[in-house]
Image (cartoon, helix red, strand yellow):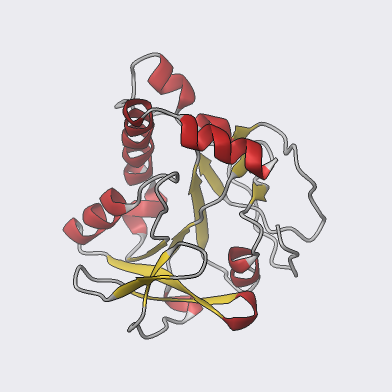
Length: 204
């Protein structure tokens, strides 16, 4: 399942991906989750993922603080503040991460933009990359979560194994129908919000 989604993400044209990203960013910035957040955590995206540079730039324009993750031993991670002059290195998983950041406590993070490969808009279940970093982190997080999903990442019901203790994403933003209709800049309804359950997670 993961390989199938990744192949589709890598096959999308730059032009189409840019259109979807523009729509997703517009809808994200219009949410109260974004507007009310002072501290936003976001990953430093790999080339096939939704690019997060525009999210960072918008946050800085609005005076928000951006946090990015650093992986730690035992499949753990921390978030630290990110600036344009922060020193970054590429880890063993091919992901850029800061090397000189001080960790920020969980209760200081207002919003986490959670990456992934697949998202169920009906249930909030997420298919991650398999390492379990975000799953373990979200187990102890009580703030807001949102994910941005390209069409090939969007499912009504999950088509991958789920478990009762999985933590679900509160808000999933999609744009497939708006881009198809050429309406990427209109305000549209965001996927159903769900109650987050903070229980132990497995790799998903």
